[in-house]
Image (cartoon, rainbow over the protein chains, first blue to last red):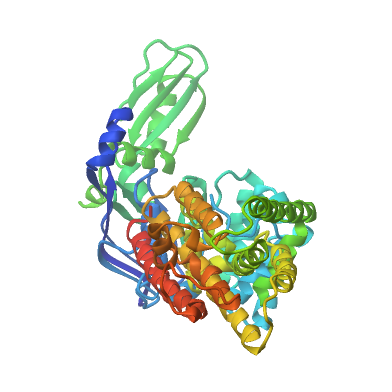
Length: 335
Length: 259
């Protein structure tokens, strides 16, 4: 299947005036400005098939927003190829705008002083949405996002969760084929987050809308995405499924044991003791080398055990290691 | 059309704000005209212009300026959009960016324009301007030219924000220049200032040159044909075209740097 979003060797370099410390430095910069080049996005190649829901991850300043700005046509790439639904976004900005929807979690695109309903009306005019289609979409969004009770309240009086739901509807009214969601759950409470996740899943599954989601909340990713793309310092570190990432990076499981009586020396073959306080102990073991079942059997044979628990490697821990160590999991994945 | 409806709704959202603005507008122009009256009380004529004629000069500027404010005030907000990062939203929508900015709902009421119309009618009578077919055709054209001149200058000023994010000072300077130099006949200034007002920031085409024509004054200073003021729409069009090219250049820069 033809990918709907395609980038090849996409690169963005910013040339920014370099700041020098202090007043003297600022004055010097005024007369002889020095420039520093920052590579925000470096040789990013990826393809997204129509209907996919992809998590785009990376620490702050990794280049996520710059990538999205190139995909939406806001920024012109320094070099490389970018194509969305067959168009080069920055060259055909307005045509591309009809194909895409954008939600910036930190910046609302609704009109501050107007009721939601009026913001939607204005968007209908901007996008030339046929009236019948507009009505169908709006009714559906009002229904599933439960916007009925605050549709006529000025946006400035809405809670963050209500405003976010409004922003989602605003970004989707014109039936975009691709939506970019930039930290859409930021600052939301658990209930509001769940409502937003449900909605994302729904438009992806029922309308076949392609979704590119950036977030720092890995619960969003685990709940919604099969495939994730990780970027750091402008470079692509990983592109694949969450399971593969866990397999490659999360081979180490942990076994937490609670003893019936205090133990001074605990030893079990096939596992390394990480921590003990005589009443409990935590072992790390490679799940490829030994099964949890065998490990527990060996333990119970030697000690009186009250309780055991197995800790699976979590995505957060894996991602944290990738960010901190900066190693490409793709290298790890390669046999 | 939709944009106008929305704008009306936005304005109605803050009725108290409107009342305060209206009071301020009246006070502002009242003080300006009173100051002119006081000056002319001490010097019965400025470069051959009496108070009645200067009142007409002011009215002509006010018409163009208030129409510009009513239609294009949000252009002045561009630096704020760039600074806050809200400018991006215009780029992800399928319309011309400038058109979108102009249609952003704002708090500009037609109160200043209404006031300008009232004052213009009064000043025309007060200055004994002959009302004939030429006058009736020329005034709207001259006002349109004035709007374009104002628009060109505010657009060019706003565009500078793509290079230097904070341009408040520059905006302030340009606004003060406009207020200062549209009140008096240009002929009272030195040659350098006159050339500036005629050809660099062509405020003289908003009111002075047209007033020279309507009032049958003569302008020895710039040695020009009496009907020069009727070229206001052409001057406005040329300046707007130049400002718009500059704007396109700024927009390209923004899309290159995203600053």
